Amino acid sequence: MNARTNLKGKFKRNNVAEEARVKAGIKADPDTRELKAADFVAMMPFAEAMRRRGRPKAVTHKISVTVRLEPRVVDFFRQSGRGWQTRLSGILAGYVDRKRRHQAQ
Image 1 (tube, helix red, strand yellow):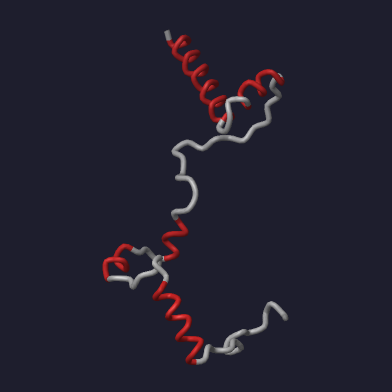
Image 2: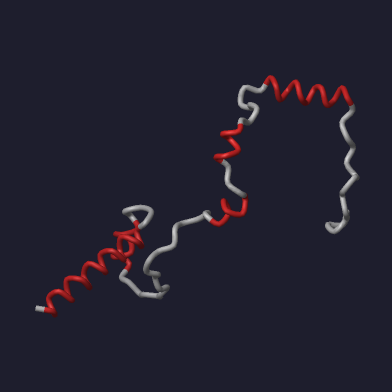
């Protein structure tokens, strides 16, 4: 079937007995319930929900660079688990801050 084919009206509708079985299954499911007015108030529009996905925007943006490091340095940080690059960046930032304070004196 062509991806551009219009499927509107091409699906077979349930007959009365099938529809009754579907509704009975929904009613018997303990994880479903009728939505109340408070549920609708708590909902947000789909477009708004999609804008909020992902990590929050950082105040300062990081710059992607390529650095050649000794294998023992990389191994040490990688062994510390996920986030090793962030920890390495934090250590380098601390070094820069100490150097700047020392130079300011």
